[in-house]
Image (cartoon, rainbow, N blue to C red; front, side, top):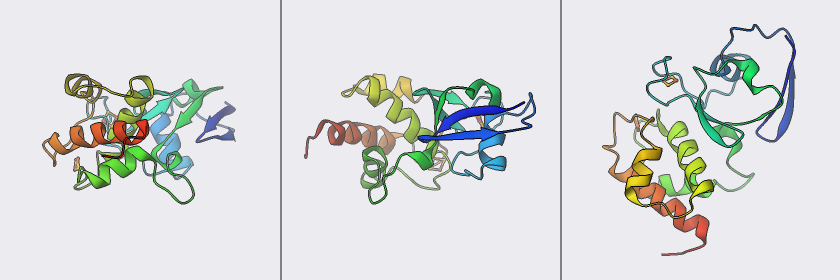
Amino acid sequence: MELIFKLNGEEVRLSQVPGEESLLTLLRERLGLTGTKEGCGVGECGACSVLLDGKVVNSCLTAAWQAAGREVTTIEGLAGDEDLHPVQRAFVEAGAVQCGFCTPGMILAAKSLLDQNPDPDEEVIKNALAGNLCRCTGYHDIIRAVRRAGKLLRGETS
Ligand code: FES
Ligand code: FES
């Protein structure tokens, strides 16, 4: 099938996309966007999280054709030419990255949350990130990073 969608702000047109191909496979193998990670492959770890029309989805469980006519955002689409996105910056500043495998999905889940709720409390953050597993950090610094990202996005400096 032919597939047309928006990816990180640019229109993408692809032909001969098999109906059973996942969005994860399409992004990583066809388009070379390897920032989206494959962990479990069955919807349990969140490493493959991307935004579909601004909402977090597991790209391993999303068929590529489901992106037709919609907007997909991957981690590659967040930073500007010169600057990291504030959520990326907050993760660096809070030391919330160790091996980094979960980080793209965590950051996209955090961005989706903060787009809807710019000042979430800890419980809300935990719920929003419940589908994203991290084997390294113990989550404390990730939650701190999301709170810091909220401050940066709200223009608070401290
Ligand atoms: S790889 Fe998709 S949820 Fe784990
Ligand atoms: S930083 Fe290693 S899995 Fe989260």
